[in-house]
Amino acid sequence: MSKHPAETIELELAILMRRFLAATTHLKVGMLDRSAYLLLHQISKHGSAGVKALAEEFHLDISTLSRQAAALEQKGYVYRIPDPQDGRAYTLQITEDGSRELAHTMKVRSEFVADLLQEWSTDEQQRFGELLTKFNRTAFVER
Image 1: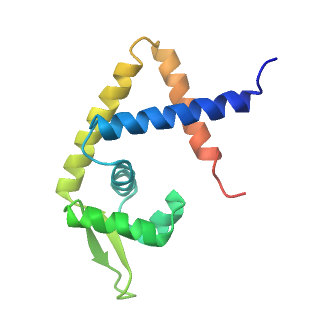
Image 2: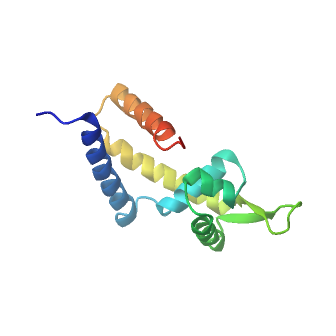
């Protein structure tokens, strides 16, 4: 009896997440942890952002994101820009050190993935990337 495609996808995603997290954490593929990498990437790509907007983007509590942002600030990877309208609010901007560390981590992680996919054709890699992008854009959208 064949499985429903969702069963296969769910299991393979679980395996992928566990293995990729282990490789990028324990094998030190890049120096940034997953949360730092994603936050810096978001700020780098889309410009300065407030904690609330970032929390919404990543589906996290504001307190969780605030702790992650504070850790990045302590390392010198981001700095706060006060909101001129509200003295309590601020946006986060990436620093030169943050940009440099993000670029290094992106390079190392991309090389790691490229090595994993070396036996795949360019067309297979392209299609896999397209499908992952589609999945990420549609899978967890508020309904």
